[in-house]
Length: 271
DNA sequence: CGGGCCACCTGGCGGC
DNA sequence: TGCCGCCAGGTGGCCC
Image (cartoon, rainbow, N blue to C red; front, side, top):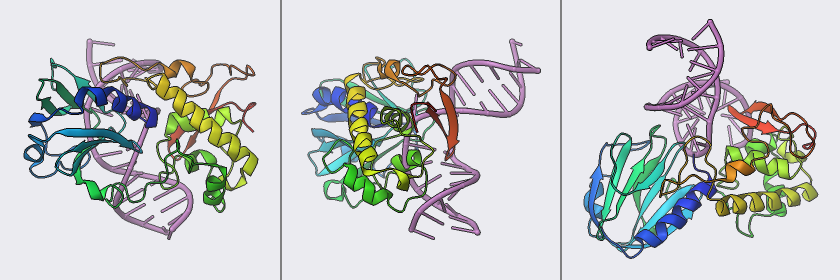
């Protein structure tokens, strides 16, 4: 799925296309994705104007002029397409704008969600209330992580992916960041020193920003709103590179299962 | 409470 | 060709 950079890429692509436009027609093709669509979904949206598009964690937030926010999450396989579609298979909702732009929400695995919240619920809604800090802000720094990891005995890889601590870092970018910071994913979070956390924070910010600049990572099927692939996957150093050689030290890239997810890493570079 | 496990879904791939 | 098991950018619930 889209991690932070992929959702950010969707946001950047969608913003200039939809801000200032209004919804003229909505098609909802199922009653639920991961959760139910809200009651009266289409009638709440129709004739509202889009005033802003933002992102919180891996959620895309479409701000409307009726004090509501259209919330989208993309799960593992969600995407947005624009333009006429030949098939609506797995297209769970479509949105027509007043300039005849068509926006389609597609998610074959249906781990994503679409809902509507009030603007003042953005911190208190159950989807958002337990979310940690954004990694591309100054709040995300070594001292913050030192405090959060102090008594955390789980491995650093899973700790990085813990949404209660910091958001947006998923399976790809956790692995890539740990490689860049030369930290083994197997170490307990509590064992990472302040100096190492400084290196890790910097690595995460650089990796995420570079991925955004590259339009995200297309591993299987991620595409931006115009159907183009991201190209950050070409810069991956460890993710999906099991059995290949490390670009730094030539060691064969290894993998391990942590929390049911595959972690790729270099046993030589990461200690 | 933290952490481990599992469920939610579809589709693509490799092996037999 | 076709079936089967395994795997996939996430999240949350349940259980100890």
